[in-house]
Image (cartoon, rainbow, N blue to C red; front, side):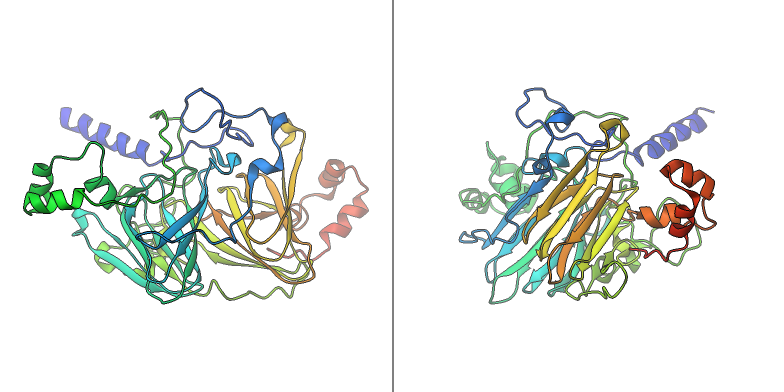
Length: 438
């Protein structure tokens, strides 16, 4: 009986950990970080809603290269919660990575986030290393412009420019504050230093080698690590299950039904399970709304399973739009690559259905909180392109017009006429239209 009880306790603890997130889940429409508050919580306390503006969800300058004149030929531009206070509680962020010719982002980990990267310019050699229990296997790939690759949470990974011209990438991370631990800095550059006796034994080398390494200047990557007052609490529920192992590559052919997908055997996994090409190619926008999307979700990249993040490319014809819609399982953070977009989201009834909107230019970044109705419209006479990260492997989309007026079977016109306070003929007309699934 004692053994059975012990097994039950272990199983219950495993089940409970499946729904813990690394970031707290939102309990209201928005919780814009009050960066000036002295109150310590897990994340930040919220500004009053009446003090919130569109600028709390906005950042410019993502089209500008950062200075890579340093020892590793690499630099990063952040769009984390400290730069965009509206990201607080939303579990996603964005960074721009700039590489000098043959520059590199040295081996490092993100303790609180999975990373999904797409190459905008140049050629990168990238990889991550599985943990000891999986024989420290290296999963690596050469990426070209338009390719996408995933780095699972907590695993040591790197990116290196293998070309003689600068390279640029955009990465999304599944935390408002992912943190970074550069391996060389942490092991050989800690303050105070780790004992050279300990490191000599760990690395199986003479202490003189360790002393030499500790004497070097280790460049600290610039992703800001904010030291917060941490709380472990059952309030921290995730929308996607948190990973309980290095990787759980989706077995898309299995008939077993779980929340997400069951895992392929590790020995069957290859770099292609974390890879997708074609993100530099425009999609067809010849439709009624002049918009289309290219997905990098779990169905396209099986390695995203359990990692709580994905990427999409948005293509807009001149004056095209992504109609009002919601993502039931994800916050979205968008950056404009080309063109000019008018974007916005609407707060819920309890916040007076307030519209938060902004005009975005090339290099601007904007956040759309989870579950809120939002839109993006090209207000220029040339095509527009954007990249969006979403805080789920399968964020879902609910296009408002399609759902309300194009459901199958249709919602009763009596119900809709009363809801919209119009004549039933207006509802019948709307239900007769052809609605484009964005």
